[in-house]
Each structure stands twice: as C-alpha cells, then as structure tokens.
Image (tube, rainbow, N blue to C red; front, side, top):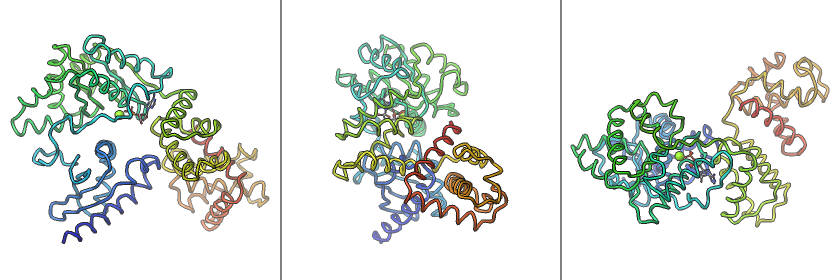
Length: 453
Ligand code: ADP
Ligand code: MG
C-alpha cells in the first residue's frame, strides 16, 4: 500500500515537473524544481508530499510557483491537490493555509531561517542599489534609530531578500531578536490566530522582537483583515522603536490598493529602490559569485553572460551556476570557445519561454541581419542568400513562439507546413554543424530580446 502511494506520488510529480519545465525559464527549473521528488500521495485527502532539499526551496515553491504547481497538479491528477513540502521527514511548508494543519512548525523563527549566503559581504554594491545598501547598513548599526521603517522596493531578483537577510544576520550577531517573515506567512499565522482565538499570543510573539523584517509585503493586497493585523503590529513595534524593514515589489505610490494608513506609515522612514544593475555591476557580481563557487572563467565569458542576462540577478546567477558546473565537470579545461558554445546553447533554452514578439518582428530582424528585403524573404526564389534566412525565420518562429507550422508558412508567402517543417529541421542541423550559423541566430535572437525589453 505504502509502496503504491510512493509510486503514484513519483509519477504524478514527474508529470507535473515535465509540464512545468516547458513553461518556466530553465534557470528557475534547475534551481528550484529539478531536485524535488514526489514521495507520497494520499488519494483520499488529495495531498502529495514532495521532498525538497532546503526550506528555502519549499518557501520559494510555495510563494512564487504555487499557482503553476497547483494548476499542473490539477491537470495531471484531475483534482485539487494540497502539497506538503518535506525536508527530511518533516513538513516545512504546506500549500494548505488552513490552521488545522498542525504539522507545520509554528515558531516563525524556524520557518524562515536566514540564508547564510545572504550577507553584506556577499552583496555587490553598484549605482542602482547603493542607497538600499546604505540604508540596510545604517539599520544594522542603529536599529530603530537611524531610519524606521525602511522600505526596499524593486522588481524580482534584484536583492531585496538578500538585504533583509543581511540585516538579519548582522542584528542577530549583535544578540538581537530578529524575526524575518514573508507577508504571506504573516497572513497565514494571523488567520490561524483568529481561527484559534490566539490573537493575543500572536501579538505577543511579534511584539517581543527587536526587529521585524517582512518580505514581499505586496501579498497583503486584498487581505483587509490581515492588513489590520499588520497595522497594529507595525504600530506597536514602531512605538517601542523596534526596527521594521519591509520589502515590496513596487513603489509605495503604486500601493494604493493597501490601506492608505499603512502606506502613510511606511513612507515615514527611508524608502530605497533597487534598479536593474548596470553592465559593470553585473560583471562584478558574476566575478564575486564565481569566486565563491571557486571557479575562474575567462573574462569574455563574464562579459557575454552579463550582456545576455540583464533582467535580474537571479537569472544571472542561474547562468553562472550552470556554466560553472559544466566547466568543473570538464575538469576546468574547457576552452573559451567551448564555454561560449555551452552558453549559447544555454541561452537558446532559457529564452524559449518569452515569446512576446510577433512574426513581423522576426522577419524584420532576419532581413536586417542579412540585408535582404521582406519581399525577397517571402518570395519564391530559392537562392541560398534568401533560402537560409527564410529558414531561419521558420526556425526562430517555431522555437520562440507558439505559432503552428502552417501559420508560419502563411506569413512567409503562403508556404505549406511541410516546407516549414523541412526548413526548421534544416536549421536545427546547421546549428549543430555550423558555428557561424549558430552565432548568426544567436545575434538575431539577441536583437529580438532587445525588441522585447
Ligand atoms: P528579490 O528579493 O529582490 O527578488 P533576491 O534578494 O532574492 O531578490 O536576489 C536574487 C539573487 O540575486 C540572490 O541569490 C541574491 O543573492 C542575488 N543578488 C541580488 N543582488 C545582489 C548583489 N547586489 N550582489 C550579489 N548578489 C545579489
Ligand atoms: Mg525576495
């Protein structure tokens, strides 16, 4: 019976992973999902236990990927399934917010340990994050006094959580009682305390900290009652000069969906945004991460990575991790060209899931690249100068968009789907045998990515 449960869990989870892998960037998949496994499926209660190797992974999956995981689980199993994330034999997170799930550890400090890698030392300071960094340091030297509250905001993967943890480490090293919590977990605990009529102990729990670091506060949007709870917690701490630090994915001015009195409280301290890092900072970050990983790569490799992965630092790290792993796997003997090759493959994959350009964008990019006209690329002539670019358009459209073969044929002068299929296959072959073509396609995709951003 137990064995059956396990086998079913494995099957279901593998199927879910298979589906998610096609929908999320490769970096996220590798980082968060690749090493998870389904270990038990309880048919009757519709729960699946999934093993993860850190509580961080569990936290991430639950906070950032819950939607897609839930959907795919639903698709695969045909019903709504609750996920319990297990580390060892212990449930560290659960998708069930219901307070009756008693297996979740209740002490908030245990739920969110600080990531040991997220320190001030490992944070690379550049133009776009220096105010936030300075604010974080000021808070660490003078908690509750320098700026209170401190609010960080930025898009994803730009260092907010890193800074919150760095503050946490620093304050804990000074013997302070620090609570780091996501606002989602705050919500869960608050709701549970109302249900269980333990709001008093909830308050005491939070009131007794020297610093409250609350991540992703935007989760409170639309949760009026929890906002109320947060407002009171905030006031109690603030009145006692306890430090409050908040991370948000958008500026306060765009937070009008939160209660005005909360936004007004939040704007009373220091607000610091973090923007995308500059090219130079991205290189510095890569070099710093590489030295932590104990790998050394040629400079041009960092440059390429920094050029390609510009949207956030998590993505940058993902690329570096894979290149580093690959390079170590090859005994650190890979030549610059081999590394380059690896990276270009890697980028081909990781960008598959951002198909936001149109067929016309692709045709235009390819025409410009080869200095030919749209009529030539769509026309009947089978000269190599037109044929290859035409086939590249087919290939790129097939790879980067969800267009069908016949739809692609249609935009390319009404060709039929078998011609398109042939073209795609031709280019797939060439990519493996002809480095020059590969680079050209790489450049074209680059142009498209720029259109995208
Ligand atoms: P956010 O919370 O803003 O989404 P994170 O703090 O989780 O982003 O950062 C994503 C990843 O990028 C983390 O691994 C973090 O260590 C790294 N990172 C972000 N900013 C920096 C920086 N300035 N220096 C070094 N690493 C950084
Ligand atoms: Mg974060």
